[in-house]
Image 1 (cartoon, helix red, strand yellow):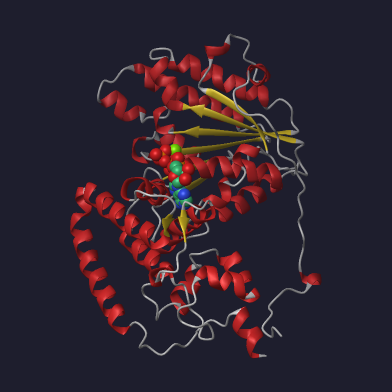
Image 2 (cartoon, protein in one colour):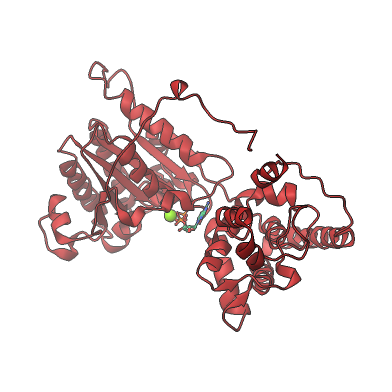
Length: 430
Ligand SMILES: Nc1ncnc2c1ncn2[C@@H]1O[C@H](COP(=O)(O)OP(=O)(O)OP(=O)(O)O)[C@@H](O)[C@H]1O
Ligand SMILES: [Mg+2]
């Protein structure tokens, strides 16, 4: 019997259930551009993209992001609350200043654009009782300046007019996402000091004016991303309600990114667990040491459930607490790999396991331990590419080698004491 079941008293819980269905179809269809109030021909405004929300194409984006701190849920909670509070018709918007403008900034590849769109999707769902539909409007700021050099401010004006037209329907939630916003809002002070052309200055002016207009639309949220916040105009930054730094992941989050990627490769059978001792995942005292994944899968219902939930690489808390006597288990090796990768972007980390498979293995399907060896090689190469990190890499190599040798010496000899009680453990002991 499971004794330690923690839960909530249903009378203490306020349930908030949202039902929704995904909008099919995708970006950029001409009909959607017409809805945006743009009558010109197809290529007229490729910098603006409209997607109906909640969109199937964004399903899973929220869950795919891993952060050490609960940044996404904090932002979602805050935005939902603010949008709900501001629906109070008694609020005088001249007295209470709130632009519904958020800026996600941080190093490249840390998930800012993905988070911006995932937030738009989640907000549409959360605010479903106030809005009948949602629209994600994406502005590609880079394309505005590069394609329309000299005409940028005019184009910016037209794009924001289109957004205003979309927002006319008050029951539509419009989530405007501006990627690389520094391109459209570069510092006017710096530009005038360096005698740069007036095009960028005019574009910045235009954006500021447009934001002041959008501010009066209760149904518009603007989410911007940037990895060059220091070049953004101060007047724009002053209008931002929430500035959120999105950092590179730390070891814990890196472990989760690797874990989900490797488990996915196993699910797709590009990596297969083998009877080789290097793929042994035993971590429970009641299970014979050499029982390997497939055997356990076939013979033991409890293990089957465990593996189905944990997949092959176990969650971090299990890896740390229950596998400390098994340094060579796949989960522990992934943890060691994660510790070496601190400083790499989420984008690089998501790519590494698959890249490793393509570059450093030569047959299919590949055993898990071979895949992990390939991952280790790919990490070596990735770290070496990054010159400023060389010193840190050297240090961490020493640490890792020492740690590995130390652990290998002790492997099998250390007494095993589970620090986290496991459902399987509880069930078999009662
Ligand atoms: N924290 C993270 N967790 C999981 N995956 C991540 C994370 N950060 C980035 N990724 C992966 O990297 C890909 C690219 O992320 P995204 O384009 O959102 O980054 P970005 O911060 O906008 O980069 P840039 O500054 O270069 O525009 C995502 O699709 C995702 O697969
Ligand atoms: Mg981006």
